[in-house]
Length: 221
Image (cartoon, rainbow, N blue to C red; front, side, top):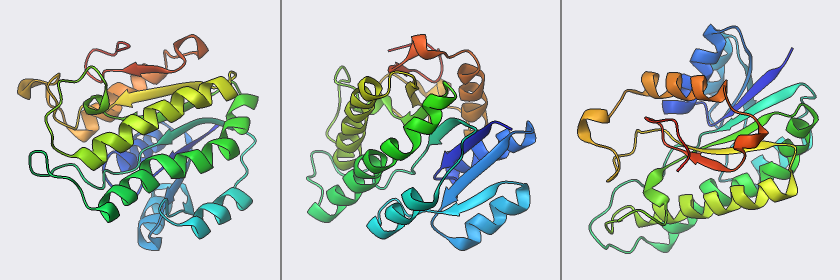
């Protein structure tokens, strides 16, 4: 049975992806770093796998053990480490490093492990990104560590698509991070965001590869 792997399913939008996919009858694999979160997800019907995106040992263990020949979709949804800061405040080196480690280095390690499995099924590798990291954004100087790491993630996705042309790579804005392109009245709940994204994924193919989609309009940006 085709499987979907949700990376970062402990809380927030990752948890909601697991919840809605399980309700639809999908075979769902999930990762979280806390055993308690994995047990909760397993009670819902998912297969839990321990993974700490900020730990080399955990990443190594996951890459050594994980195997899913029927993997058709990966949804990578790491929760933001830093989303707010004072105007033009330079983040600490530690905070910047944690953002880059979780949002960029971890995907850099996981893609070579997971992309060949997805390529075998002509599947999709989906990253929950943010339109606050686009070059075209008229950005104010807040959340610099988060926004910089997500911009780097988007470049990583572009590079991965060249290396694995059989995989449909997508970068999706969830609409949950306020930005200059998201009006207040357009803000939606986590449940609504995930529902919209899952409907979008039903329509994606490799011809939509490496595109960035706005969560509300479901169009490439």
